[in-house]
Length: 204
Image (cartoon, rainbow, N blue to C red):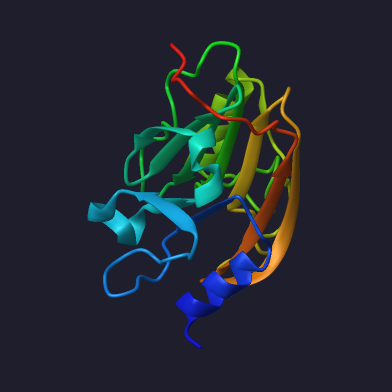
C-alpha cells in the first residue's frame, strides 16, 4: 500500500464531513481521490497548495467562497472556515482580509508559523505576524504545544506547525492522529457548528 492509498483509507475510517490536505503526494499529477467526496482545489499549484474535500451529502451546506493555491474558504451556518498552507519562505500572510460581519471564524492549516505561545523553540517572522493577526481578530490557537512536526536533527524538540484556530465564540476540539501525512501528524477537529443547508452567500 502506498502513502497516498494509506492516507485515504486512514482518513475515511474517521467518517469525516470534511478532509483538508496540503503538500500531499499526488496520484498521476492529480489530487487524491476520496470516494464519496467532492474536491475543491487549485489544480495549477497542487504541489504547494491545499485541497478540501466535502462529503457529497454535505456539499449543499457550504458556499465555496475562494479557491487559491494557498487558501480555500467556505461559508456555512454563520461560520467562515479557511483552510490554508503557507510555504516556509512565503512573505505574506493573508488568509482573509475581510471577514463576514458577525460571523464565527475558523482557520486550519500548516502556516509554517512558530511562536512561543503555541510552539516549542524560538518564534519566527511568520509566527510573530500570525500572533499579531490573531490578537487583532480575537482568535486563538486551539492546539498550543501539541507537536505536529516530530523532533528531528533541525528541530530536536519538535514544533507545532499544523494549527487549528478559531474566534473566541467558536469552540473546537482538536486531537492528534497518527495518520501518515509526510513529516507531519494529522489533526482531527470537531466543532459545535450546527450544520444546515446554506442557500445564499452573505454580504460582507
